[in-house]
Image 1 (tube, rainbow, N blue to C red):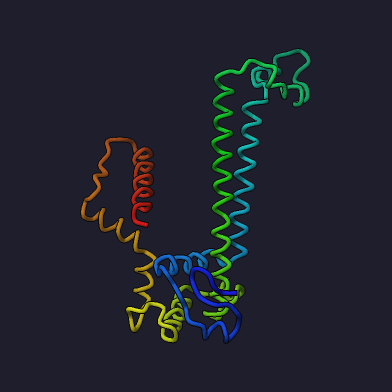
Image 2: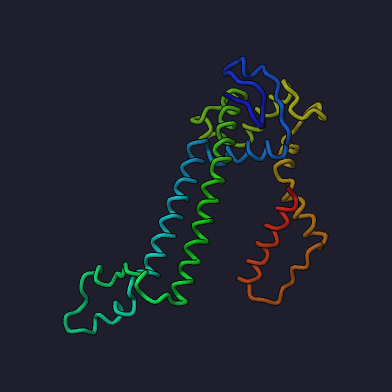
Length: 231
């Protein structure tokens, strides 16, 4: 069913193709169309984000285990003993509640809680992406007549041609009689074009007397802040 944020009505096949389109934000719409194309369909979008959640969760719990429950002081010198090192389980201390709470343990607990909150936020942000992916799959299938299998080998310019043809039938952009590939690219790249223009006009003074790595991180933070302001 195609509907919700990027279109109106439901159904499938020719009936869905004949229904009028109601798009609130063309910038967001074209960006999601391109993102769906770039990620090659709904299953790839879901799989990549689920794998990211699993990797992030494993990293959080495994690193917390290593930092908090492994007795590294004893493990690091076990090779100097006559009997050598024993089983790894001998160097794991699960009795955290019976030991004195140190500053290092507080740092690890803070790290664990912070990244658990980040993991939950990542999980929460997955559901809007899932809804958008479902809308885009319906849009590609019913409006553009592009299946997921075709999408795997299709070029972006072929998708743009179908978008232009769809506009001729339904006037996606009401203030334009015709749209071109350039119009669609400008919609998708609007925020990036703002950043490029502000950089060219020297709105930002990025001359930082620091090593390259620090400057690079600063540029990324400034770019993220500006992108958030341009939404």
